Length: 310
Image 1 (cartoon, rainbow, N blue to C red):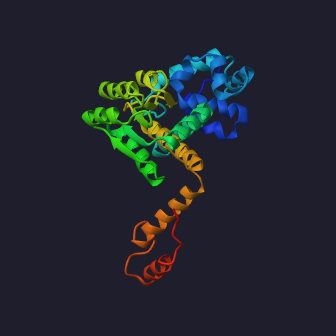
Image 2 (tube, one colour; image 1 turned 60 degrees about the vertical axis):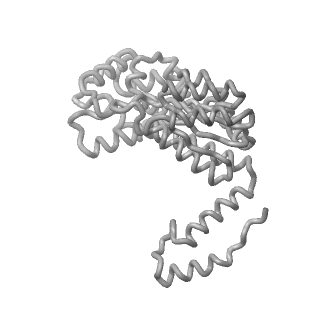
Image 3 (cartoon, rainbow, N blue to C red; image 1 turned 45 degrees about the horizontal axis):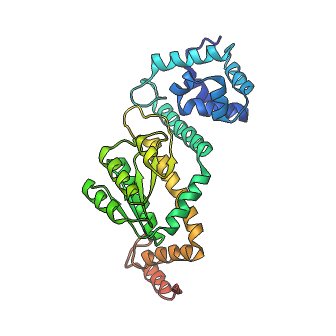
């Protein structure tokens, strides 16, 4: 068995770029959730990494451990002795370079795992429902989910979809009573168990409204919804909804909005370009300051841009 003053997590981070591709996938899965990996079986790790079970065994042996059991024991000891309450991979005496490397690598590994688990068929079903909806109301509670709901509503608005972002409990119930069978209640809650949002989702569904949830799988919200965009990331050491959950939600929203734009047709892409040109024309999102010759010249050119037809 390996005996080294360098912790196993740090060894994996250092050696990751040089590992064979298949073994790198195993290390990515472990770094994404070290606590979960320490409890997982060989079969579970192989399934998550999409490699064979012998590859998991070879990965553990490449770090000089005689067996997977010895490797996982060392991993558990490393977490118990040196784990930080600030981040699952960061040690209390890490340098700024190590903190940066570990947090970025953990986020990359977490998002890579999200990509492997993402239900693309469900994404398509949700995009189709959003394309057909008369109105889409986005429900949220709490700072993180409200940020995501506002982002989703803003993106829907730019695509020409009638939508609202609602975080007030009373207004969510009013919305749920008015959406109807051709509306969508899009509920975002990573925790997935906030009481009044669950009540609004139940009420909306009782009125025949399609309820779409962006949440962790197997939450109470997921069980209520008609369609579920399940997002699983390792738990954050400090917050209920950490940075990796933020990034995962934003990426899923991005994928969903691009897919929705494809469904809505080429006129939507043309409209998005017009929005961009309009903002530039009025001095927003422009590299030039208003009043400079280059800025004035660019605005004069934009006046003659073609307009969309109904």
